[in-house]
Image 1 (spheres, helix red, strand yellow):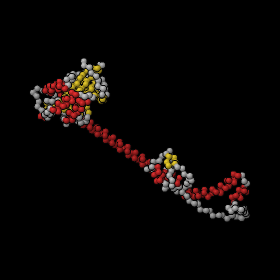
Image 2: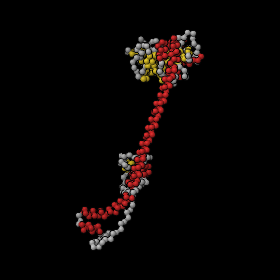
Image 3: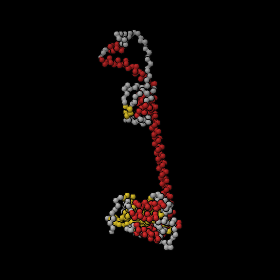
Image 4: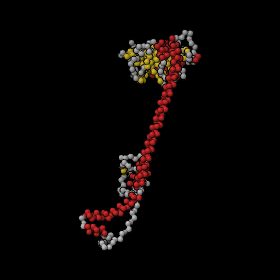
Length: 395
């Protein structure tokens, strides 16, 4: 047997199971797709040329050539092989693929996918009887394809799980393509004339005619199913986006409610009054506490509290027999909120903080919110999170 090495540059399509392993050259695969596309909506057939061998107990089929079916017949509107078609194929084998044999055939069926019917399988079994001869079905519109090989019993076909595409110079295929360009194009299928004696593969025409309606119904059902799946996916995406929008709006409403609560607490009269009272009471309480801390007697403390501000004067002790006249209570000075005397350069956000509460805390006003946002590059006032450090700008 001729020595043959496996190609190094290959690409696997699908998975590889048991049985014959199929290798098809990339130039051949491209030519078959172009041939099917040139046929428009009509079926196209071609013969495959290749080598069959066994390497390490593994049957392998190398497909290195493809020959367009010429001199075909039209029966019931379908293109089929004739005896003259086979003679032309043998002539091309001798000229461009001398070391190869007919390894099967290709069927291009636009818009019908890569499935086969029992009629197509029957036609293959009747015409291509050698166990290594395969069927390559392709749809040039949907860009799908599949190989079919003989089962172990040799009485049926089964779809191959996968195959290999290998890359080679393939001078034979390139020479055949050049010859096809120089040759006159075959007559349109509608004008083809049947020969006096049709060949045995005419069974393919009858099988294809009987099964075409079944294939069409199956293809329509597949398209409807794909459409329903697509619509379901679109509805799911729309529902998901609407739900996410509702959740986001709810979060924004909650954030606005917290900000309103902070503003109400900051500008309420109770907060202003309490602040002014503390500022008024603080000096006297501080004086009393300092005296107590130094250990001075009670009388000294009272003297210190009641002492006059003028130096050299001693405050008179109140007469217990005389009722003291109440002094008017000074009006408290209203303030927004106590402002930190020494403002830090940065601040780490805590849970419950908002830009308004931070502005009031460090500047005593809510008017610095926009300045803080600009200084830190914040576009949305709701995008501050607990643990994030922001910079505090100058007033």
